[in-house]
Image (cartoon, rainbow, N blue to C red; front, side, top):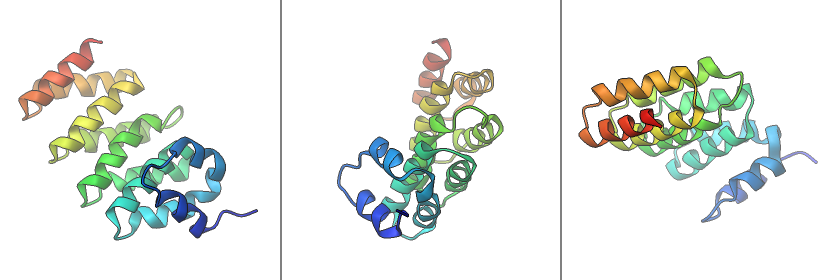
Length: 152
């Protein structure tokens, strides 16, 4: 049975979304709907859609997360930063591009989440980006966080 926009919307409208259950239940059939929500005017719905897309995975999901990294809305960029850790194997260049943009974001909250997600990927590229943040981030608290993450 096809996944409808209403199915996805009702799941995302919950106060506490079970993202893993939603990703399992809907799979890649939900991605066109998630892309629409991610680009829509409802910031909360967009941020939930971006994170869910990251859990669903695949090239279309990577594109949703990548586009969200350029959103004018900080909560949507935070969702992209959180979803960065889910881009997974084979998405190295996408993950590196998204991480690069989010680690240079003007918003401190976006950079903080991006640091944690980048560290979770554990690749040499991400470790280098974290070390760079430890030296260059304008916020002392984020330089400290990046230094601790790089040392792990």
